[in-house]
Amino acid sequence: MFEVKDLSYYYRNYKALNGVNFQAPEKGVVALLGNNGSGKTTLIEIITGNKYPDRGEVQWEGKDFLEEQLTDLEFGYLPEEYNPPRHYSPERYFKHLTSLLQVPYSSLLPLYDCFNLDPVKKKPIKKLSKGYRQRIGIMQAFLGDKRIVILDEPTNGLDPSQRERFFHFLDRVRDDCLVIISSHSLEESLQSADYFLIISNGQITFSGQKESLYSRVREYVVEVSGEMERIDQLTCEVVSHKKISSGYCTLRLRTPQPVADVVKEFESIGLTVEKIDSGLTSLQNKMKKNDDEKNTDSLT
Amino acid sequence: MMMKKTLILLRKDLAELWSSKNLMVTFFLFSVLSWYYFAWMSYEFAMRSAQRGETRITIQNYWQFNADTSLIQEILSFNFFLLLIFLPYLFLSLLSEEKKQQWRKYFNSYKISDNQYLVGKVLLQVFLVILFLGSSVGLQYATVQSVIEEPLNFSYFGFTYLLVSVFLILILGLSTYSFYRMDSLLKGLVMTYVILIFFWLIHVPLENQGGILPAFFQELSFSYRLEKALEGLFRIGDVIYFGCLIVVINFAALKSLRKQQL
Image (cartoon, chains in turn orange, blue):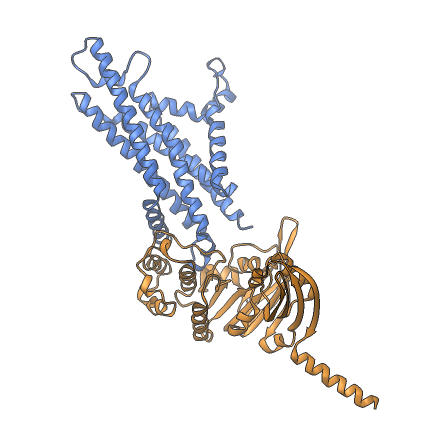
């Protein structure tokens, strides 16, 4: 069991994490969801030992995770901004990393196929695209016999086919280790994760299985104005999109975020919310409808 | 085990260094400037010797450029001045590139400790100093041998270079500390030179050199110790002094490195 207890972290006077508590299973894929600035990366940096918390602890099977990292525990990490050495080829870089980990280089050869890196393994990394570099980063996180792998926004820079490939890879490893993935995208996470954590303003606002997340998801109908190209930057799931005029449209969104956070997200990408109506998910609608029917019956 | 990982890290750093354009540019500039200055000074010396009607150029009068200035002192000071500019810049540009790679962020997943990392960096500093000073010694040796007729005695040369090397390793340690403290190449360089100038400027006038306090400040002074070395006076105390400072400054660098994570 992976457990975070009462974790708090301050950047000077700003409280980035405020008593974060959650438990995650020993194996499977866990999605850590949240907006920009919600505290995802800070939480991950504490878990990976890159920041020390002001309060709280992280435990793995009842032991201090931060201490275990340096002794027995095999864990992998992909930072948010991943830049491997530019002059190395992937092959040379992985030989260097396997010598540090003291694992045979031959053990990672199947991973080249998984991430489709075989054709470029001898090219200098500086000549590779962002997508290839990101795949190198994901691959290095899985080197060796890892029990926990923490990936900070791993699908950044991956094209749709590579994302699919990555999700297939997750399917293969989900029974062998615990993978924690930080992401903005609920839609993507629903494809791959078994367990969900939603972080907002430095606090975990939801933790649970996919089914219980569905019951929390809300639908919003939002009228927005501004540059419509920016809609692509939204992290919530856009169910439908209707253009009314140039610079004005209506969107139907699905997200577990509260109204205030949805409005804030639109503002952060430079779009103005003219009108917002919140609805409930189909599941909740159905439950509500059942309740209404019961109330009508009792009145008659 | 600790050393093995340190050496793997050093190998990565050397590969980075080797492919760095900064190394090529600084090494080329240093070699050209150092060699040009040395050749020019040797030519000046030969001209003056000819004016004085000396037919045989000996090692003694080669060292004594004229009554006031030692030729080798001039040249060493010039090389030393160049290295004080080139080496910290080159080393900090490597650290800065490493910072961009976020290499340190996934250290824990490779079980690399801060100590292993820093020892690797000190070994890299030693390598850089040997590379640059070694090349200038080679050039100077070749030039001196082309001017004088007798074999060179390296005792003066060697001791002076030893102290200069230790001092340069200290300056690279200082720049590492400054980089981790300021978290930027430019600010790190500025901080390095501010500290260096502070220790350089500690100077006690001749008339005040008696007493415990002036003697203490005199001992702190970088310039005093290096002047003595360049005059050909080898003192083991100077090497120990700079050696101790290297240990202290690297310990401070380690603390700054850890503090970055807080």
